[in-house]
Length: 135
Image (tube, rainbow, N blue to C red):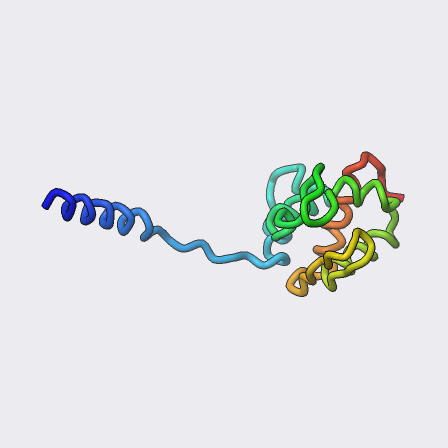
């Protein structure tokens, strides 16, 4: 009898605390618009916007800022590529379309839901990680 009451109490607990408002996912364009309109000074910084986009997408499944996981670390990417407009576009294209062969046989999955502009912001952040400035 006590076990039945415990089960009911636990079920009620989960029911009460799981009935909160479900948060709707925000697409990248809304995320950038919301971030850019924020009062925070860092939100106006394109590097900060790129960092926020990287953190809000699934990048961390395969990449880490400093350590190699499934793919290279973001810092290793920054060290491999010069921080130029051409490389920003190149890496943004790899974010959107995916790629293989540069870092081994494991392919990078495509992220077709990420816009070219947001992918460029993400690439800009990644290329900044070795301390190099855009030129």
